[in-house]
Structure formats: C-alpha cells, structure tokens
Length: 255
View (tube, rainbow, N blue to C red):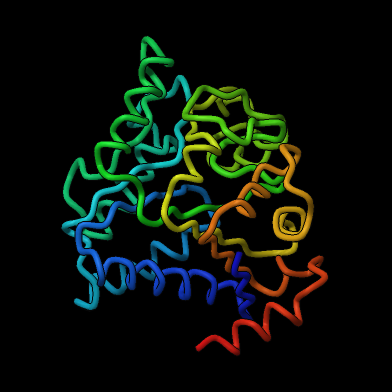
C-alpha cells in the first residue's frame, strides 16, 4: 500500500485526478470504478477541469458505480444514479449510458447483483477503482462485519451511515435502510485501488485501514491485501497514523 500525505484537502483530489489521467493516457478505453459521496468530489472537479481544458479525453472510457440505495427512484436527486449523471458523466463528457449503476429497484436483487458482476467481468474488469471511506471504515457500503470475500449484494446500512448521509436528504427518516453495493471481494479484483480521505473525522478509520489488523471490523483494511493500493489523504486524515514520517520519506524518494 502506498500512502501519500498531502498538505491540503484540495490537493487530495488534484493528485488523485492526475493518477486517473495517467491511467487513461495509457489506455483510452479504460474501465473506471466510481465512488460517490463527498470524499471523491474533488477528484471529479479536477477531472472535469482537465476535460474542459482539452488535457483529458474520457469519451472512450466506461465505468461502474460502487453502490446504490434500495427503494428510491433513479431520478431522485440523492440517488447515486442521479449523482453519476450530474457529477460524473456530464462534466467528464463521457458517453450516455457508459457508467453502469447497480439497480436499487430490481424485482430480484440476487439476480440483479449477479448480472452487475457479470457486466464488470465482460468489460474486462475495472482498471482503477476510486474509493472513499466512511467514519466506521466502510468502503462502498460494505459496513463493519462484511465478509472480506463478499460480492455485489444487498446490505443493511448502519445507523451511523444513515446519519452521515442524511445531509443529502430532507431528513434522516428519508435515508434508505438498505443498499446494493459491490462486495469487498469484487473491489479487490480491480487492477488499481485509489482511496481518498480528508479531515480529522476520517483519521481513526484511516489509521485502522492502513496500520491496523486486517479485520471485517474495518472493511477498508482489506486494501492491505491488494498489490496496488494507493491511499491519498490530507494531514488531518493522517493525524492518527504512527508512520507518517516514513510515508512522506517514501513518497519523496520515489524514482
């Protein structure tokens, strides 16, 4: 795992966007994995700026979203299908329909999840997967105690996650109780994992994921098993790490 500590929260998105742009520069038809929420928002803003400036072309890329709520219409402004269209596909000038989102309104969730897995496989797998991290260590909506080999499936959201996400709804009562999420096993099959976090509210989760034991109590710790995982965080999110001096030295010393 490569841990990169940057000075400011804005630098997190900037550096992550450069890594994604580098991936696309070597493979124009790259398959991208998109996370939603506030943590990766800076990435999408930076990528959009590159696209507007003509420095990046994402028109040949395709993508998959990590998750979706169960039981709200795709057009609901807080749905991740809406987020993908509003904040990713449009600003990044990707082709309409090029980003697949799990179906939170399927009549048969087990079948829908299997079909979503098959679509990832038929696309050749995900080249670079963007990840945020919850305060309780979840990635995607893989809440604590998720199986480390889990696949795309329906999950019950913790009360903490529903509270954290209430800001996207009119009230906490409107936050769905269930979701469809790619599993930890699914996420680990991406060729490159790129996790970003900002702020001291993520410091405990980052410390557990990076330096703690691999445990289902902190689902993000599964990144320790991946052969190419990059974690980009600001100083506040790095506040509880014990080996910050080493991470900074290793990054400065890269060839």
